[in-house]
Image (cartoon, rainbow, N blue to C red; front, side, top):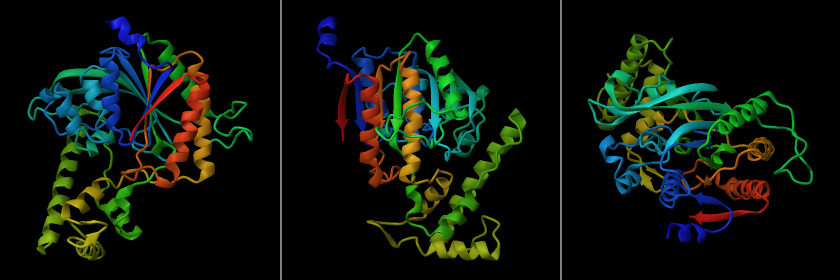
Length: 383
């Protein structure tokens, strides 16, 4: 029966295109269920403007209920469950030059169940985890899994081929591209397990949709209020103090907007007269119509928490140059190792990929993969 099931699979490399990026987790689970991917030990090669390394608000013990996991997981939270459950044992995040949420380098991604809360937390002292309130020290965790996390930046190339800009020749010389090729080839050649190629189209052109309801001055003010300064070093004491300061900062800002909503005195955060005026100006937005829904105090707080997200709607030469870098990198990697599965997230409905770019980006990327595989791909569109 298993042999018959395998023979009934469509020929070619499966390429699944989804709209929301968390749906990639469901595609991966189906691939595990059909034996295309093993249950454990897969490498995830993740092209994205964002790390997507947060964790859903779900008890760790409930991660094994896949339907509940899918229901609770959002677009920024789908990789950590795959790591915690053992399905992924290496993560490579490839990012565009305008994504600054982590520096290039190799890290240990330490994931476990926090004994106090029961939630999955991360003991890696990166700003991303601390500012996102996901960090917990390793001695507070159980069921710990430690996997390598590699962060690499791809450049925007100026070189392109007039006959096929999605697959330029000859390969250019760029230090960031050379580093990415060397590192990725080294990683994949040293692994015997399959790997997953995952691409969010916002990698090529990136929008922060939380900016849409605010003027540039208002959003700049939110960035100032919610800015988080990274710890001076990663010692337990310094990181612990930094975590405490961030928790206090976020809690006070929550209270600030609730107080503003109720017209109360703004005593929760030390503000200059200019800043206080800006808070009152923003308060007028609470309860007013923004788009199709009413803006609430929580909406302003969420926008502030997301103010560190990259925002770079790329020009056509920019995204074409980044597509060129991606083409070169994938060609170098595919020459020695092919993925077992490709997932592509459009991310246009939620506003992270500019809608005017998404279809062209998707066509270009699928064309690159199709050419690398000599036409032997099977594209499924789940949107």
